[in-house]
Length: 331
Image (tube, rainbow, N blue to C red; front, side, top):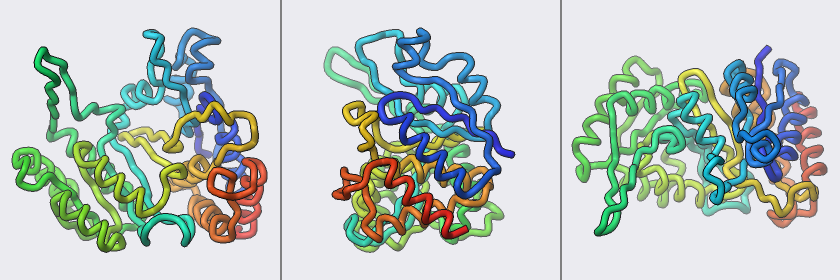
C-alpha cells in the first residue's frame, strides 16, 4: 500500500483534489490518502502556511498531490508553501509531459517530456539590485547537473523512452555546457535508451518545424522557459498541464495553474490538470492505472466532453464522473 499526502490548499484546490482522488480510486485500491492543511486559509486559521503536522505527513508519504495556494504579497509572515516544501525536501527537478488532449487543440502533434531544474528549490538565477540597475548571476554546479540528469534518466526509464535529448547552451556559455555534458554522459552510461546532445536553439527550431522529433528533453533552468513555452503552444495545454517537482526521495504532483478563487465552490473548475497529475503520480510510484486515467481524459476530450472554460457545458462534477466512467470501462 502506497501513502499519498493530499494538500488541497486554497481556491479550487479542495474541489480538484477531490476529483483526482475519486478518479484514482476508480482504478486502484493500492493507495492510502491522508489530508493535510496548507496555504493562506491555513495561515489565517493556524498562523502557519505549512504546519509541522503537514510536514510530518509529507515526510511519511510516498508522494504528494498538491492543489493550489494563494500568493500573499502583503504579509511578510507568509511564504509560498510549494517553495517551502520544494526546498525542505530538495525537489530539485521539474517534469512535464506535453501531448495533445484532442485534435482541435494546439498547433501540431507532440508527445514529449521536459525535465528541467525546479526554480522553487534551486533558484538557478539570482538577481541583485545595484545603483545602476540589476545584476543577474547564475550558478551551475556539478552536483546540480548530476541531480537533474539522474531525475531525467529515472523518468525516462519509468516511461520506457527510446531517445533522450540534452538541450545545452551551445558555445555561448562554454563552461556551463562543459559541466552539463560531463554529468549527462556519466549519468547516462549504461542506459538502455539512446542519447543526443544539441544546443537549445537547434532544439527550439526543430520543435517548431517537426515537434514529433523529440520524446524526451533535459535542459537547465536558464533555457527551460523558452522550450516550455514552445512545447506548451504546440500541445495547446496552457491550463490543463500537470507538473511534478521531483527529488531523490519525494515528488509533488500538481496542476500548473493558480487557485482561481473567483470560481471556487461554483462547480466551474476544470480538474483536468489535477486528474492528470494523479495519473502521473501513480506512474511514479509504480501503481497500475496511470495510463488508464490519461487515456480516459483524452477520450473525454476527443468526444467533446469539456468544462465551460474550454467551450464545453459540463461542470467539474459532471466532467469527473465522465472520466470515472471511461476509467471503469477500461478496467
